[in-house]
Image (cartoon, rainbow, N blue to C red; front, side, top):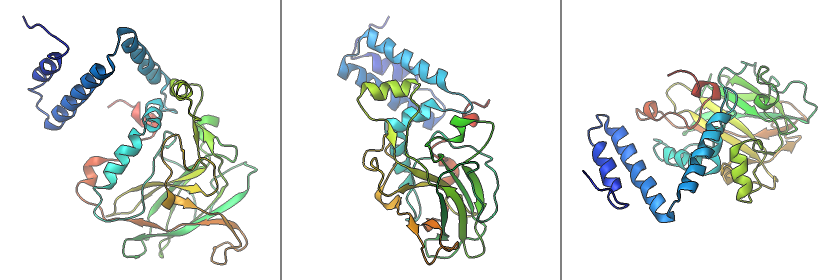
Length: 301
C-alpha cells in the first residue's frame, strides 16, 4: 500500500490520470491538479476552510438558472473571464477592435430589428443613437454584418432581471451595403452586480464596491471574419478605472455627442463608433467565445 503524504499525493493523482486518452483533457486536468494542490499547500488549507469553499461553490451552482449564470459572474469578478479573453485576443490573425466581456446577461435569439429601430421599449430614459461602420482591417465595408446589441435600462437593470419572458434593451441589426449600422437606444446606467447571491457575498467580504460602469454590449459577426465580442463604455462614469469585472478599457470609452453634424439622425444625441473585424482563421472554429446564453449552459449536452 502507498503511504500518502502532503508531498506525494499530487504525483499519485497525476499517475492515476496518466492514461487519459484525450491529450488536451489530460493537459488541463494535470495542470489543474498541480495548481490546486500547490494552492492548498501554500495557504495550509484547513478542513473547515475546504468545506466552506465546497459550500460556496455549491451555492454558486444552485443560483444558476436559464436566466442567470452565477458561475460566469464568479469568473468575471475574479478576472478569469478577462484573462481568458485577453489570451484569446492574441490568437487573432490581425489587430482589430479590442474585445470586452460577453457578461452573464447575453441571450441568443434577440429580436431582429430594422435599421435605425429602437431597442428599448417603455423606458423614459434619454434616447441615444448608436451609429458607425463595420469594416475589415483595411477599411473595406462589411455589408450585411450582424450586429447584436444589448444593455441595461436607464435605471441599470437587464431584461433578464426585470422580466425574462419579455426581451427588451436588446436587438439584432444588419449593416447596409456601406457597412453602416444604426440603432436607437436609451442611455444605460452603471449598476451593481446581482447582490442576492454568493458572488455578492464574496465581494462584500472583500470590501469591493461591486459596480460596473455604464456600457453597451456588441456582438458582431460577418462571414469569413472573426466574431467580435465587445462593449462601449460611457465616458465620465466613476467606475471606469475600477470595474468590478475588469471589462472596461480606454480604447472602448465613448463620448456621447449632441448635434454631431455627421449623425444620420440630425439633432439627436449620439454615439459614433467604427468597428473593425479581423479575418477568421481555422483556430477560431475551435476556441469559441468567452461566455454564453445562460439557458444554453444549462441545456442537456
